[in-house]
Amino acid sequence: MNAANINLINPVETYGLVLTSLLYMIKFLSLLVLPQVIFNIAGMVMYNGFNETVKLQSAPLLAPFVCFRVVTRGMYPDLVKDNVVKNMKTCIDAGLENFMFEVVTDNAIHLPTLARAREIVVPSSYRTKCGAKYKSRALQYCLEEDINILQDENYIVHLDEETLLTENAVRGIVNFMVDGKHDFGQGIITYASGEIVNWVTTLCDCYRVADDMAKLRFQLSYLHAPIFGWKGSYVVTKVGSERKVTFDHGIEGSIAEDCFFSMVAMRDGYTFDFIEGEMNEKSPFNFWDLLQQRKRWLQGIYLTVHSPIIPWKTKFFLAMSLYAWITMPITSLNLLLCPMAPVPTFFLFDFLVTLIGSVNLYLYVYGAVKSFSHKYRGSYFKIFLYIASAITVLPLNIIIENMASLMGTLASKDEFYVVKKDIIKLQESMV
Image (cartoon, rainbow, N blue to C red; front, side, top):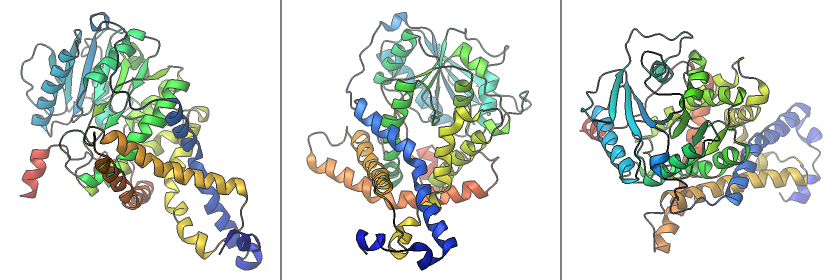
């Protein structure tokens, strides 16, 4: 049915008042994601996400002391130890002088004795004042007076177990610290560097890369506030500011501790900035881990949005993002309802819905170009192949996001699922 015929329909007479109201509600729910789309457009238009090299604004020798902190349960000791050594070498190659690495673990991994490395084992008996759990508990333990060895003017770079630094990221961190205008910062993480374990999940994460390049960059560079939240890795904090915000916010701040921390910091007036240079991680190794990862994110954001200690003026846009995700299974029905039960709309609405769809599709292209830039150099065929592959996995990613939405909304919200990260253990489990 063409647009002219649709506009001739009287939906109340055709479907009844109740069904008409439901059809329009489902249509208008799709606009919840509009603020994110606007920020993504602004980020792509205003900033160049493809800088090859980050230039130092000051000598690394003049940078404040920085601690790279890795939090782990101790399930993958070899992975953590290997990555600490690799990351220390990257720091040295980038010219960084004043740094150390801390590995914070629930179970001892017996980190080799290194001049710039420290292992902190969190006692099983440790309890925070507000009952923080999981990663938040470990992070808070490091801030205790008798454990912390850092000064308030020092910096911490929070990394996940599998996070690998690049020299560009180190230089970007140096620039951020020397600038000293903002308390917290974050940069881009890509997922296609090195060995790719699962091509499909890696292609699904192209959207996350583009989201970092666009929305995350715009909110941190222009507003200096993470109004849509931020990630839990590649987080750079000033020690004094982190200790004031703390990670001790009970169970509601323990599922997506990164998001909760950013909202509390923003509430308290701290400022943020974007950091040039990307770090590298790996996408989940299987679909179940991808689903569980997304489910935990949704649950953590849900707890953050519904926390009474964060005012609505701080979390309004995060709430819109959350409810856009929660209602995704409903808004996805528009793919069936539009041709089966059409209702008349107006031009502006149609334009905005088309804009939302086209921008989200383009983000997969944008993210694929960034993620695989080191693999397709000089080959137009390869770049076309990567872009086409990213678009091909879009339906699967939509299904996974819908399932995560349903599971995250309906299931208990006090679990912290840890995805598999060690390739060797993964291979052993498959034998």
